[in-house]
Length: 468
Image (tube, rainbow, N blue to C red; front, side, top):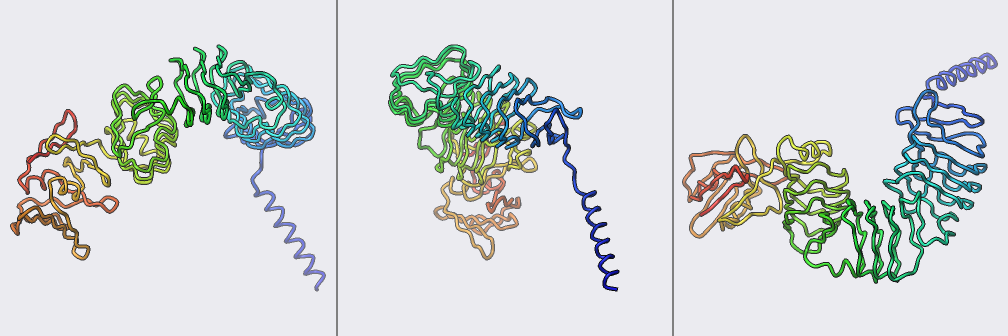
């Protein structure tokens, strides 16, 4: 009996294991020569391999599927790989894709590659030859760390394909970057304390993050009008940056740094872009007024501005990086209905309000907490801010929800249901408050008229004008 039971159990285990195997998801594997490739068909990404490649040419098609990317760590640590060719068609080499391949000595990169990730070839101790046919949109600064091609180069300018400057190895006080260079990689000149002057070529388009960071002696730099992107911290800790006058440091219409102390800065007209990291980690900001000339807002432009409440996004803005407002936990975007800014806010799941401005006796009003909104054709303003604006002291009774506002001999109360009394006399108009994130917003016209203030809506400037 025990023997029969054991046989039955073994049979059930066998059946169960086969069902599990059949039910398990299969990774597509395709063989080319003596190499097996694992492919994510949906993204066209090679995710791994099996075999002993020596002279490897990355295939651009596997099983009828187009290959466009080499995934993170896909070929890392290959003990046999000696030469590598990445043909046209491949656009991305992900982080650590070929890291720590001890025999890899030569790499040919096709013109279609636009991104090389962090440590993509790091630790390839034999890699002495790298050639590139095109123009890199983006290369991480440590992509070739600890390779002879990077550390052993005796060239003054370490370049990829003659278009991307990866590293400057010189020690001159005045440096002229060669014509033809289109991008300067992150950290390319970092910590060079000798350089006093840099002349950049007319072909240059991009300066990546921290490109000249901690070049303490750098006091003069010629930036051509062709430059349309400057990464975060590109000129931090340089004499040049220190000597820039005014609150706004701009290059070619790009705001690259805000040096002011205002919690409500208004950017001047003419600025076309907010550069990467321009306001990053500024915990003083409460609101920022952008001019109509703004077209795009780059990555981390306002990153980490945890106290920022309001940024108006002009109608002309065409692009906002998905990390532009990373860490802005209290932010509401103001914009025009059905504009790019509203679509961006919806995609990023950020609070959005149709843009409304407020003035009191001709002076612009800023809001540190909740922001003005239009609700059912009425403009609603934060109750406390509105009443304090008109000179009232404001108290809130947490047990009843009653708000009491006092100015001289006048006492105004606002109930949670929107009933308003002035010195005990009930106002005929009721407009229930709206609670947004713990702040009560009230109808600007109802409250202002109840206390004998004048209210005018300027449709041209979208401004609620309040006056005594």
